[in-house]
Structure formats: C-alpha cells, structure tokens
Image (cartoon, rainbow, N blue to C red; front, side, top):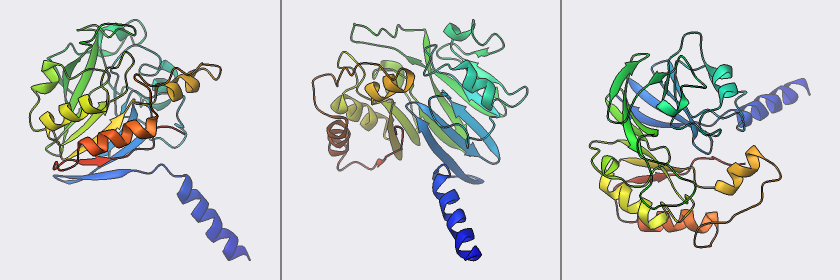
Length: 257
C-alpha cells in the first residue's frame, strides 16, 4: 500500500511540474516554459531567463532568474511583485524606458541597441502599432528582444505589429509572436505573413487571449471578444492553416488556464 501511495505521489508531483519544451543549441538544449500570456521562462546551460513575469501565473514552481527582460510598462508585462519574487540578488533586469519609475535599477535598452547582461547578448527590437486606436503602443516606448543562447537567436516580440524593424530581423531560430491584439491588429493572417518573413525553425503564438488575461487581472472584467468575431480556438487554427506548407514548426504553449 505504501509503495502504491509513493508511486501516486511521484506521478502527481510530475504532473504538476512546469512542462518545458526543448530546442537544440550548441552546448545543450534550450528549455522553454510558457507560464501565462507573454510570461515565459527560458533556460540554457544552467542560466534562467524570465520574460515579462506576471503574478497572475503560477510562479511557485518557476526558477529564480539570472536575467529578467521586460517588454512594456503595463501590469501584465511589468509586475514588480513577480520580479521581486523571481529575481536573484543582483540579477539584471532589462527594461524599456517607460519602466524606469517602477524598476529604478533596471537596465534601459532603447530600440535598436544591444547589451550583454548576465552573460547573454540582448538586442532591443522596436515594438509598436501601425494601425491607430486604443490601446496605443507608440513607437519608441516598448521593446521586443532578440537573445542569443548557444548560437541560437530567440525573438520575443512583445506587443507589436509587423513593423519594419521586425521584418528586417535575420537568422531567427525561435520566435514568440503576439496575436489578436485589439483594433484588429496582428490577426492570424497578418501574424502568419510576418512569421513567413522571419522564417524561424519554431514559432510560439502568445499574448493572444486578451479576455483571459483581463480576467486574470480582474475577475469581474467584462469580455470584449476577438476583433472581427470568432473564437480563440478558431483564430489559432486559422494561424496554423496559414502556416501549412512552410518549414516553421508551430508549437502550442499552455499560456492560459
């Protein structure tokens, strides 16, 4: 009986562990763990990188961060509580300029510039709107990032349309792309067009269920639905269909409950 209970405990514990994907790189695999919305944990060679950590996700099994990247200043991107929970003492936090008041010791990395933080090359990529309308994401205020691990380039777009700075990126191995942004920005066909230009080996769609994210921040938030109608499942399938016949592997992350 005791042995059966022990086996059950092990199985339950394993099922509760954060599930990580892997991507091969020089010197070992890169491990990619979706957490929530645009929050993702990336591991390589014993180093842990968190992007947009958010307390609305389950951070209890997330690993302490050697490096944190923040794409914007709104709460589901810049969450001081989550940063404090995950940040190792002295770990660098790379931010856009709009985050300085909340992370005074953050490393501000303007669009188009690069740095090395915690031994990781980090490039700041412009993230902004083309189509006008609220919510606005003006040019120069927010960042996407390209990080290089084991010779592989990982692009984390943040919230952006397929702007020229994104289209100009080369040699991207893994891309994280937003979809279903309000005012009909980055709908499935537009995201697929952008991904085809980047031609990564792997793409993750993230930041695509705005209603779920709103409920995570405020349980009484009223659903807005998708721009143009339809369901989240339909939009994800439309993206997959648009990517048929390409060499890019579309991976699904468990971003929402």
